[in-house]
Picture 1: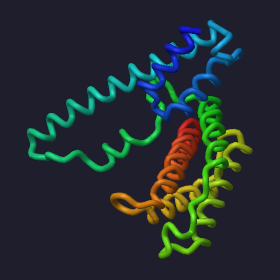
Picture 2 (picture 1 turned 135 degrees about the vertical axis):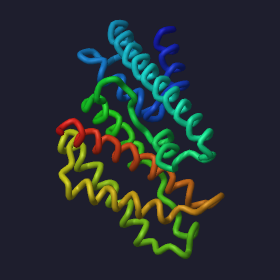
Picture 3 (picture 1 turned 120 degrees about the horizontal axis):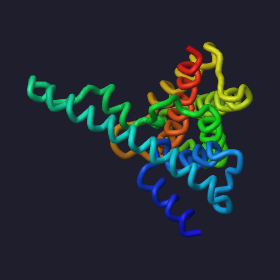
Picture 4 (picture 1 turned 180 degrees about the horizontal axis):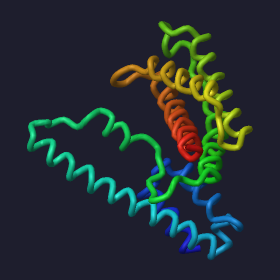
Length: 206
């Protein structure tokens, strides 16, 4: 029990996919017995997977820090937007490609949460048509369902639909505080995880 609690604390400190998605990833990749509470061998496999990812993450951060030092010396005081976005986005650092099974489990976990999320009240943003929000929500739901039905693979058309949906959601977010952001940012977190999982599946096939 203490080992299980310690692993959950470790995921709380380092969860590259977010806490719940990271836990789902670890549980799935600890096969053939992913019950981490009752199977000590599975728990140790999960811990090893997490430690390997954290080591890869720290190496990546060291490389980023070294590159930024050189860039600052050359007069570039602000990091590239692509660099900071990559650091914030969900991804699984590792010396090997991420587990497709693990990513499917992570997406399935967050998809269930997405389906339970409260839907924004139309009065929160009267300048945005209710149909526009409903359309984006339905499109993201369809993309996730397609990904899970295809066991971690989306065709190019579906992947392009996901990209367009993400752009649509992002375009509705507002700088600073906005009541609607509370909902849209949750959608975006799920959409970003789904995008990463989709991209990882394409990369593994080439």
